[in-house]
Amino acid sequence: MGTTEDLADALARDALAATKKTDDDTIIPEIDRILEASSSTMQEAFNTSMRVYVSEERARQFLNRRLKAFEDGTS
Image (tube, rainbow, N blue to C red; front, side, top):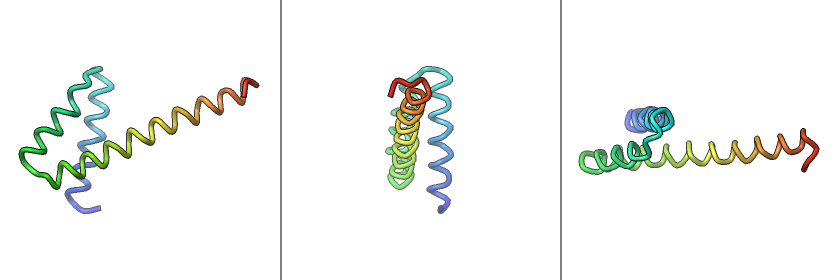
């Protein structure tokens, strides 16, 4: 990845971690607004990373539920 993507990816990971730690769902939209005002390129890269991480987490949760159901014999 390039510098912009690397920085945006790191920021997305940190924002997700902060959101989970603080249970504050306003962190990510606030960061998005800050980036929108200063760098549309960085904002786009941040939003892409956010979508990737959120999608992966949702898919992993589904997979874990499915595997647990299989192991419990309820699938």
